[in-house]
View 1 (spheres, rainbow, N blue to C red):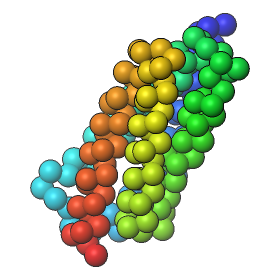
View 2 (view 1 turned 90 degrees about the vertical axis):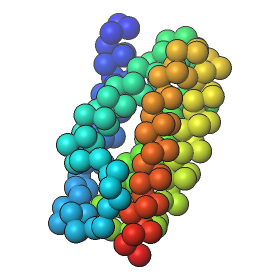
View 3 (view 1 turned 90 degrees about the horizontal axis):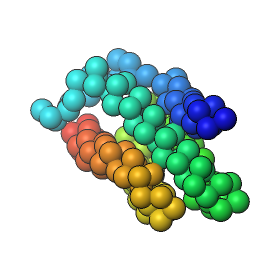
View 4 (view 1 turned 45 degrees about the horizontal axis):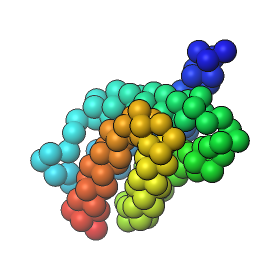
Length: 152
């Protein structure tokens, strides 16, 4: 049963990535001016896949430790934040609005920080598992800002 619940939490997170992946970079993104430190496109899928697995594992650890009743608030926020995670791809790639995506990313970053602290309070390993996600979204925010700055 524990393995099945772990798989379900990870699948939920990977499904979020699948929703975001509906909005591909395409020609518009290829033509943007980019900073020299912009990662190659081939980096993003493996990084995000890893982050989704870590996120799902973290949520599972919280669920396993406290249950739905004991961690209702932080798990509800976690599930809601998955919508914010997908929304960025829609705003940036779908409607090609880096400025809107940047504002949304600031909100997402704040929610991830709150989740990291909340997960940490339930079980330290879960909080630690969200730290790479927070770091990557921090990097993504700086990159989003640079892309917006270079192309506005």
